[in-house]
Amino acid sequence: MRPAILLIPSFWLSLTAQVQFSPAQRFPAPPQDQTGKASVEGSVLDAITHEPIKKATVALNGPRGGLQAVTDASGHFAFRQLPAGQYNLFASSEKYPPVQGTIDPDRQLTLSVTAEEQKQDVHLSLIPGGTVRGHIVDEDGNPLRCNVTTLQFRDTGTGRNAQRNASSQSDDKGEYRLSSLPRGKYYIEAQCNQSVPLPHAFVRRTSLMDVPTLTYAPLFYPGAADPEGAAKVNVAPGAEVSGIDFRMAPARGITVRGHVGSAADRNVQVMLMSKDHTRADWQRRGAPVNQSTGEFQIRNVLPGSYELVAYSLVEGRSFFARASVEAGVAPMDPIELTLAAAPTVSGSISVEGDAKMQLSSIQVMLNPSDVTPMMGPPPRAEVQSDGTFTLSSVLPGRWRLNVIGAPYVKSVKQGDQDVSPWSLEIGPSVGQLKIVIGTKWPQVVATLAAPLAGNEPISAALWPANGDPQPFQNVALTPQGPSRLSVPPGKYYACAFVSTQPGVLMQNFALRKALEDRCATVEATEEADANVQLPLIPAADLKQLLEKIEE
Image (cartoon, rainbow, N blue to C red; front, side, top):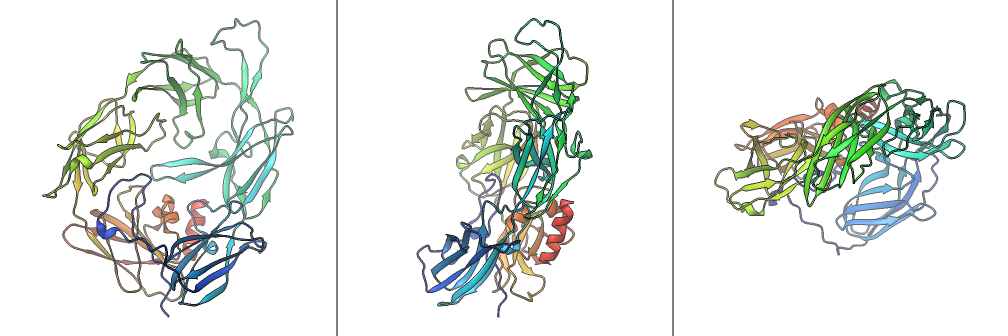
C-alpha cells in the first residue's frame, strides 16, 4: 500500500499580496460537479469526555473541492456521492478553540476511498477550551467592575509582542469569568479604568482642570505591575481555574497635557504609547482633542517612557507630530505638538534583463510593520509607463514594501543604500527608492529524505532564511516522484511534517526558529536547479518543540 501523502497546491501565503507567480506554480481548481458512489461518515467527539459534539463543522477537501457538513445531536456527519480519491477532513467548533500556531492532530484526518467504498465510523475529536475565574476588589475589599484580559507573548517575526486572547468584565460583585480559552499558559491582567477622588480645596473649573485623583494601575496576576514579575496561569483542556483574584491598589499618576497646532483642519487624534514594544499594544491610550483650541489632556499616566503621537487625515493627506514623554511623579509642563505633512516617497522600478513587462500595470504599496498607529488605507501608487511612482503621505516608521503585479522584488535601494523590502525605514526625509524586479524563477526539486513507514498525513513547507517573517511556500508532495517548485533566488529552509496544517505551523515564528537546526537548507540560484531532501519532523517532536516554546 502506498503511504498516504497530503496533496497541497503550491502557493505563497502572505498577509498582503507581495508578488505574482508564474503559471507553473498555479494549479487548476478541481471540477465542482464531479460525483461518485463513495461515502465518508462518522462522528465528532469531545476529546476529554468522549461525548458527541453537536453543530460542529466538518470540512472535507479532495477531488470534489471543498465540502462542509454540520454534525447532528449525536455528533454524526456524512459526505456522499464522492468520487474515488484522497480526502482531508477537518473538524471545528466555537466551543473548542484551536491553539494559535500549533496543531491538533485529532481534529483532522487524511484518508482514501475507492470508487464505491462506504467508509464509516470515522472519528474526529476536539479539545475543549478551559475557563479562568476570580474576583476583583479594591484596597478595602470592595468589589470593582474592571476588565480582565488574557495575554500571551508571540514572536511575530518582527519582534516579541503581547497578544490579547480573551477578555471579560467583572460584575457588580467583582466576579469575572473567561471561557473557551485554548489550552495554554496565560498572563492575566486586570484594568480598572476608574479614578479615586482625593480631598481638595475649590478648583476653578476649566477645560483642562486637574482635580487631584488617584487611579488603579493595571495589575498582572498575582499582583505584579508588569509581565516580568507575573505568574503564568496554566489552562488545561476542559478545566476550570478558579481563585485568580486581584486586589487593586490606587496609584498616583500625572496628567499629560498640551496643544496641537498647524493642522489643515481640526480632525486631529492624539495617542500615547509605551516605548516598550512588548507592551505597546496594551499600554496605549487615546486622548480627545478640543477641535476648537487644539488642546488635549491624558490623565493618570503612570511612570514610564512613552511616545506621544498626533495625526490628522485631511483630503487624503496625512499630517503628524511626535514627542517623547518621560512620565514621573512630578507634574509636567504642557507639550506643544506641531503637525507637519507626512513625507512623500518617490522612486522607480526597473526589470532585470530583457524581460518585457508593462510597468503601468504594476502597483507599489506600503504596509506598516511596527506599532505606530495609521490613519486611512495603506499608501498605494500606480507605476507610470516610465517606471516611476509617488507614494504620498507616508508616516515615518517601519514599512513592508509590496509590489503588486510583478513576479518578485529582487533588490531595493534607498538612496545609495541597499535596504530590506520587508523592513523599510521611512524617516522625515526620504531618499529615492530604486526597485529591481526579478523575472528568472529558480527551480527547487524536493524529495523526502527517507521513505514513509506508515499512513501518516504528510505536508511540507519551504520558507526564506533571510528573516522575512511573512511568506512561505507549501511543497506539493506526490508519491510519483520529486516535487518541483519555482521560487525567487535565495536561501531557504525546508522540512516535511507529520501534519496536514503547514500554514498553521509556519505562522508560529518561534517554531520556525526552533526548526532551523532540524530542517534542510537549499540555495536557489538562477544558474541551475537546486535539489533538497526534506527531513521528516515526527508529530511527537513537533509537539515537544511547541510545548517548549510555550514555557
